[in-house]
Amino acid sequence: MADFSEDEAPIPSIEEFFDDTLRDLEVSIGELSIEAGAPEDHVTPSKRRRTSPTTNTMGDSGDPDPEKSDSEELNFPPNGDPPKLGSSDALLNEIAQDFESDEQTDPKVAQKLADIVNKRWGSKLEEAKLKEKLAKYNRPDNCEKLTVPKVNPEIWNKLKHVTRSADLRLANMQKVLVKVGSAIAKSTDTLLAIRADPEKTSASALTEKLGKLITHNADALALLGHVNIDLSYRRRDAIKPNLNNEYSSLCGSQVPITSLLFGDELQSQLNNIKATNKIGHATTAKPYYISYDSLNIAQEGCSVLRTQ
Image 1: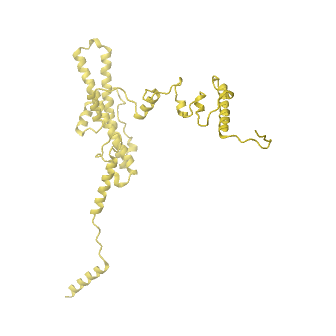
Image 2 (image 1 turned 45 degrees about the horizontal axis):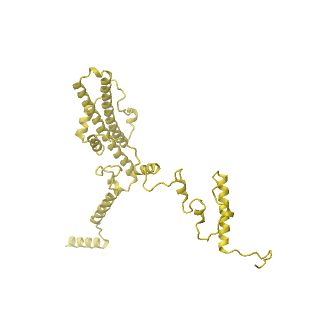
Image 3 (image 1 turned 45 degrees about the vertical axis):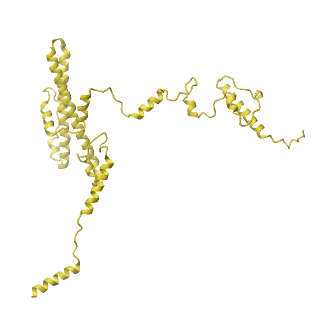
């Protein structure tokens, strides 16, 4: 073997270069494991056998799988076993539930009751039906606060017509809420009477009282739904000044209110409005202009007729 001077060091082969690099890496990992309190089960560099560069040396040494990502390492259970595909993972189930629904709900009510609620909270009561329900409930004599506050005369006389109209609409909604309060107050009073002396309440009397309770609460639900729809219309009116004039019809009562304020078919409504506006522009008659020359000719003709 030829001698090399200090200035002429032998050039290592590729295989030797990879072996040296892997030894240094293994030593570093072993030192880190010792500092962290991990068991010293790694192979010492001196006992490591020579392998080709393509050999999976990390797998032979017992080190973590190099193909495993950081997220997989962090999400492994403490026992080291990866979660099986399709297994019920509590964390994943919780995340999935959060994405499925933004609203927490309680157990279902009776289906007939649910149908009534969905109907009454989906549209306003007819005028005759509303007056009928409002007339059924008067304020209990000792519930003085179940009233709609009136505007002081000194201020009312100074208000503009638009402001008065807006206040009256809100006051009408408050009147409905007052009736709801009266119905709930009467229902609660009936329950208190039954609770105070349940033994003296006969079965027939109890059935009658329970029937009234159900009616009062059903009416309260209907009136609250009416107010809720009315408030949604008022919200539309508040947004209306920010819309283009050609889209003002979106705020009308013909557009149903769903879980979205302007309905579920907003894009379809917009397309219909655009098509209607195009037809309106196409059928609008153009203004008729009389030219100056034609006016002169007409005047000359009139003068000729007068001279004759």
